[in-house]
Picture (tube, rainbow, N blue to C red):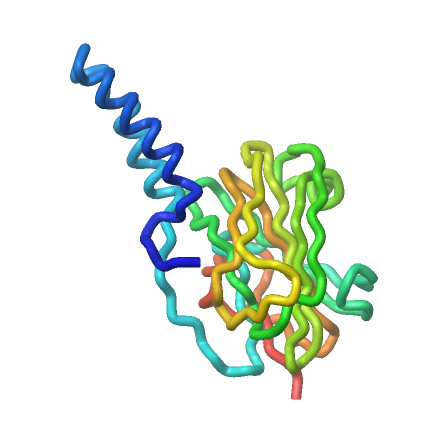
Length: 211
């Protein structure tokens, strides 16, 4: 994934609104204010900021910008295959929607599931909504990251494939227009965030490997 300040998935939306704005402005400049505002908002929504992630091997980074919605103990049988902790992060339409790898490692598991479009903050969304999961094998064990579509989201974008090597903090995909990202880590990870905390993808430390 490139480092252009706007992800390419936003070009068609922004370009279309720019054209509409120009056409409306030719008729009445005052009427063009609304599509011009939407154009600016979409440029803001599809922003792709450059970030320098901490490289210490013990930390597990947040895969997304947003607010920690829940932290629950789980017994994951999808990829981690052991008891662990699942941290759910809700992304509003004002958050950066580019997702980043929480660890360095290889993608050993990948699954996309079509589904419904319940609000991302609803508990049922994790099971019923469109979602995309990747399982990453790191030197300290396995982690699972799941992108979950929300009521406004209609497409999950992935820029990686099975077998790809990810660096910590590397961009690997995005969810359009409001969503949730879940991070499942093994039991040897000590969680350092709490419900309600704001986190920044590729920067905030969700947890650390216990010594």
